[in-house]
Every structure is written in C-alpha cells, then in structure tokens.
Length: 139
Picture 1 (cartoon, rainbow, N blue to C red):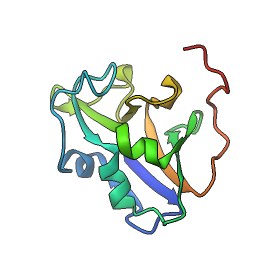
Picture 2: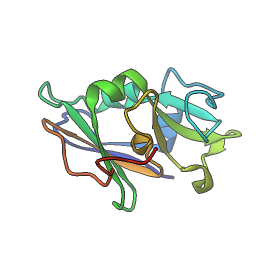
Picture 3: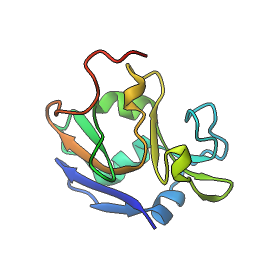
C-alpha cells in the first residue's frame, strides 16, 4: 500500500503508510467540502506535519507527487491552517481517478496548484523551493 515519505528539515518519523494515515485521529469521513473532487476520508495535513516534526526553521513544505513530476512549495503556515490529505473513498484507498491514493487540498490556498494529486513526499525546508506551479496560474 502507498504512503508518504518525509524529508528535509524534519526529525520525526520518516514515512507513513496508507494504513498509518487511515488510523490518524481527526479523520473526516465525508470530505467533499474540504477536499475538492475527493469526497471520502481525509486527515488534516497538520496531523502528518506533527508526526514529521519539522525543525523550527522549516517555513515551507514542498509537496511532491509520487512520480516526482509535480512539486508545489507551500508556506508551512498555509498547509497547517487549511491542508487536508484525502486517502479513501467508500472505505477503500482513494483511486487514481480522484487523485489518489493520497491527495492534498489546501483550503483557501492562493492557487489551486497547491492541490497535489498522488502525493508521495513532503519535504520541509527553510526557504521556498523550485516547483512546477506556474508563477501566474490561470485559475
């Protein structure tokens, strides 16, 4: 089963499996209002960040898709305040057709490009990192 890897400026656990994520407290069962297009179970991104234990100087989290083809460098404060990680639909892993098996949505994020599908890694850094998000997205 899939999961997420933590890297960069973080001293906590290095990886969570899908089962680990499904067992986290604070899970929402019906997330259609919190996670656009997912509509299943989700956990607050803050729960994952707490387990990763980013260093005090970590100000950004670069969310990277499993294939490494998509990266979004998000201010950690925005991720903590409005980030949700969808992981299931109808009690099963979130399908790829809905951005799974893990999909990030940042409510009230500055851009929809922060809504990363097929999340594989959260990398914590002191400064914004290069990403594949356009400087001026058209949405």
